[in-house]
Amino acid sequence: MNPPIAINTLWDLSKEAFLETAKNLCIYQAQNNPVYKQWIELSKQTVSDVDILNAIPFLPISFFKNQDVFIGHKPTTLFESSGTTQDVVSKHWVADTKLYEDSFLNCFEQFYGSPKDYCIIGLLPSYLERQHSSLVYMVNKLIQLSGHSKSGFYLNEFKQLDTLLKELETTKTKTWFIGVSFGLMDFSAAFPQKLKYATVIETGGMKGRKEELSRAELHHLLKNNLGVTNIHSEYGMTELLSQAYSLGEGIFKCPPWMKVLVSDTEDPTTLKTTGRGVLHIIDLANIYSCCFIATEDMGVVYEDGSFEVNGRVDYSDRRGCSLLVI
Image (cartoon, rainbow, N blue to C red; front, side):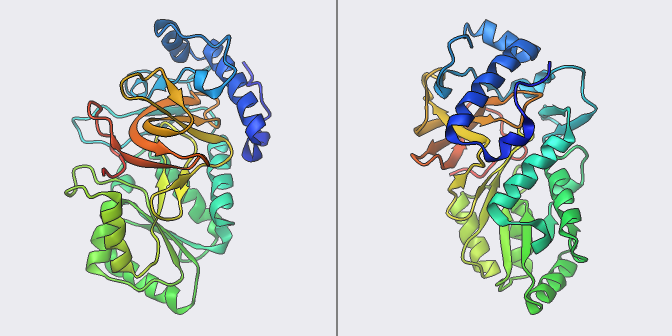
């Protein structure tokens, strides 16, 4: 059941190699992933004639809530989505944490350079309060790799964070400051800043905390309170091992091993490489679970492969780490 690819080739795939790799992994997972195989059979789809990305069967993301989606023996590492006590959370069994680390580190380097160039700060209160968060795992590893003595997590220690940011600004230290949306809102309202050397990244997460804002409204508020030109965003989820990043204006770009398609809301089986509809994610790092996931996010995919998120499909449950609605 070894995958039909050399994993270290994922991180700089060409467009041509992406298609071939996606086809090979589709066939591999259709044969070896029981949940994906059953979904293909029940939905009367096939992988024998997959010659374009649009023809690949995508597994509904809701399957991660009620099925164990993995290949081979059950892994020991589990990532879970956030949620209230009433929610059924998504579960992602991860066979190889080294693969996850390689994915998010290569992605970080492509968008931001080396973690060693930054003091890395995580303002992730709701995530730190629970176990099995893939986001906390990622940021914790980046903190370790940064090697900066001031890198670290913050829960609700806003005063200490304010003091630290002022110190980092005084020493002209490049800072990568990632936070859950409500945490950034609360902190920036209590301690307005003029950040010149910090990159601020919001990662969504407003569920059950405050009246939800559009991404544009949130970014306008944060730019005013933190004195920055742009607010960056991270698009990630428990069910993926990869992330897309927006360097401003809510337009996300994918790393070479990730791609976004859209389906029509009236006909979810019709997929397009551009246009408006329900976002479908190809994450080739999901080798041992499922690379092809139909999300419950509405959005637009542009000609250059970049995309934006416009909200949620009306009938879907809201994910705990959902993105902001428009």
